[in-house]
Image (tube, rainbow, N blue to C red):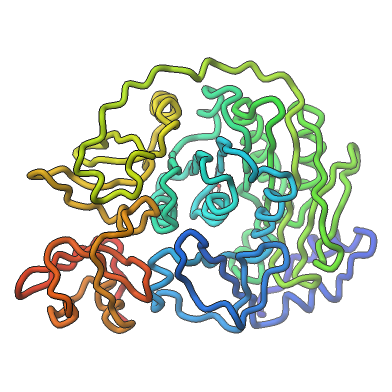
Length: 453
Ligand SMILES: C[S@@+](CC[C@H](N)C(=O)[O-])C[C@H]1O[C@@H](n2cnc3c(N)ncnc32)[C@H](O)[C@@H]1O
């Protein structure tokens, strides 16, 4: 690697008891990075993982022997797996260890784009939970929506708000994840350009921004609720010092997460309050730099009356053909599109609509037209989709042609089906086609299509 890790950072890390500076520097000189994926258990189809090594702290995480061209794998586009850095999959272990998966929660992923941790939370939280995936930066929200749509969970709302907007939801969320913007030193191996942007001044600025983000949004966490705070920085100013500041000023107490000593994760204690922190170093495990600390809110948090009356219209009968167990959902409209969210979340939707800028909510089913529905691409990828809808299986070459929005020849329609049909690859839905007697119309959204290679 031609870039040199900033000497100030190495010097600082070298002051930590037992820190192996030479091994840390060697890990940064290695050319080959670690590639890992997390499979989507809700899709029931995915890459063959039998020969792959597990990420120790995440049962759906696997290391790949080499980095393939993911764009050329239709299963990637179908949301059957997410390419995620292995260390950050530790959130899965934290959720389980803190028993946050045992009951339905309202969870907020405050800094969510592009969606790595939101897709993870979707998998690991109780199925009846509501996940709010928020991203402040407008230009990054689209990729967040796309990734959440691909992942397919209908109980997700994507929002585009400043952290301060969540003050208007006092005591509303049970779990908050703040995967904060940071100086990025933990990603130096993956993103060499970030080395040039690193400075001690940038660490200070990040540390101040992290406090602002947390102070602005923490009123949304209910008393007794959990905060998971993470960064991909090695700097104590962004990690353990934030933990101390949280305990001193934000009415939270630290929570330990039991870990297996064999995993190579380093448990630290912050200077003032001995808050447990979990550090990931690339010379000690197969993953990049990462830090996580967990907290429980101890302060009283005045809340508001969540029991607002939500006047929900009866779902149209056409829904039954398209949505599995349609009685489990309520419907609402966005523009001319019909959407569904799991029943029981009617009041949540109303509350969120009043306070936040919603970019997506639940699953878009489609547009009502002439007694039927013109299905949305979102429905094709959603777990809410009816399993009995017609499908045409494509081989890999044809699936890629479909994903390029190219021509799919009528010869693939061996069953002589007609109308709206799902294009599938190895059992995973890719999107819609309309089968006509002599032609197939490809309805893959043009903004999603893959470039010709
Ligand atoms: C570390 S990244 C999040 C990665 C994401 N959690 C994932 O796993 O895919 C931090 C995110 O915070 C957003 N961000 C930047 N400045 C912010 C601010 N002042 N308040 C809240 N979020 C901010 C960035 O746009 C970025 O998407």
